[in-house]
Length: 487
Image 1 (cartoon, one colour):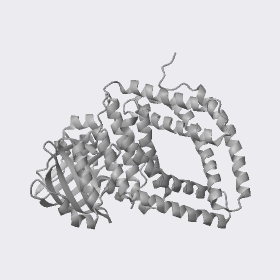
Image 2 (cartoon, rainbow, N blue to C red; image 1 turned 45 degrees about the horizontal axis):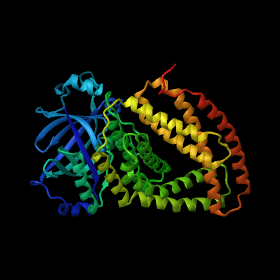
Image 3 (cartoon, one colour; image 1 turned 180 degrees about the vertical axis):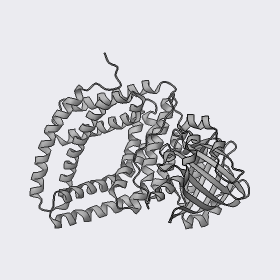
Image 4 (tube, rainbow, N blue to C red; image 1 turned 30 degrees about the horizontal axis):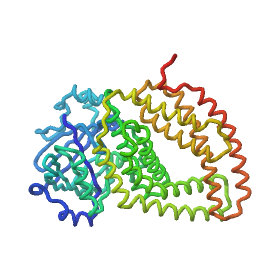
C-alpha cells in the first residue's frame, strides 16, 4: 500500500494554452490515452466506505486500483492506494491483499466480488511529466482532457493534477501557487470518482458540500488533528465556491461561510497549540473575505422570511433586488483570484507550521473545551436577555464552542456527548433566530419602506424567543460537560 497525495486544479481553455510557458518539466512529456471503469455493488457499498475500485487501460497496460480515503493530510487529497497489473485484461479482486484492505477499510473484497458491477467510466487523454520542485521534492504533473460517463450522461474532464512523489508538501504547495497565479487556476475538490457517482445518480451539478469531519487515527496528536480539521474546513469553503458563482441555491453560500467560520474556530480551538501571532497571516486575509459573503447571506435569510410571512409583493420585490446586488458581490469573492490565493496560502501555512504537540488529543481537547465553555458562561453572567448586543456576543461564543465540540467530541464516548450537544444545539437555534430578527430590523431600515406591521410581528416573536432562551440557558447550565469525569 502507498499513500497518494495530490492537488487538483480545473483547467480552462485559456490556461491550457499558456500552460507550456509556466511548466518546465524535468524530462519529456509522456502522452497516452487512459480509460477507467469503476466498479461497485448495487447499494454502493464501496462508495459509502470511502473506497473507489477501478480497472484501467493506460496505453498498452492493464491495471487495477483500489483507493481509500485516509486521515487528513494538510489539505492534499490523500488516499491509500493499492495498484497492480491485471495481466488477463480484466478485474480480479482476488489479487488484492485481502487482509490488509479489510484492516484499512472494513471491506472484505472477496465476499463482495460477485456483487461488483460497472458503475461509470472515465476516458481522457493524459500528458504527464516529472517535476523537480527542489533538491529534495519531486512530483508528477498530469494534464487530463476527456470525459466521465454514466449511461447516457457525460461531463467533460479538463484538469491538472500535481502528485507528490517525494519530499515536502509545503515545497509542492509553493510550486503550485507559483503556477496557479499567472494561469488563473482554481482548485478542484471533486475527484473523478465522485463526479462519476454523481452522474450515475442523475445529479448534473455538485451539491452543496457540507462538513466532513476527517478520519483520525486512534493515536492522533493535537498537531495532526489541527492540520486535518483546518484542511477539512478549507475544503468545505473552497468546494462551495463554484456553486456560489454558478448556482442559485443559497445553500452554497451558507456552506461556504460555514467552512470559513470553521477555519476561524479551528484557530481558536487549537490556540494552545498555534499561538495567535502565528495565525496572523491567515486571520487577516480571512476577515477580508467574509463581509460580502455575510451580507449576501443576510439578504438570503431576510427574503426567505418575507416570502414565508406573506410580505406585500412590492416590499418583497424591493428586498429581492437588494439580495441580487448582494449576491453579485458574493460571486465576485467566490470567483476572485484572492480567494484562490487564500486557499493555497492557507494550505502552505498549515503544512509549513512549526507547531508540534505529541501528547494526548483527549487531554488537549478537555483543556480547549473547558476554556471555551467557561468563556461562554462568563459572557452570559448577569445578562439581560433582551439586550441584542449581549445576545450577539454570546451567540458567537456558543458557535465557537459548538464547532470545537464538532472537532473533539468523537474522541470521547459518543453517547456521553449527546445530552450536552443537544442542549447546545437548542441554544444555538434560539440565538440564531434572535440574530435573524436583529438583522431583519437593520435590513428593513435599508429598504426605507413602510413596515410597521412587520416590525410589530418581529417584536412579538422576539419576546417569545427571549422567554424560550431563558429556559434553554438554565437547562444548559445544569448539564454536565461531556469531557468532565463523573464524581
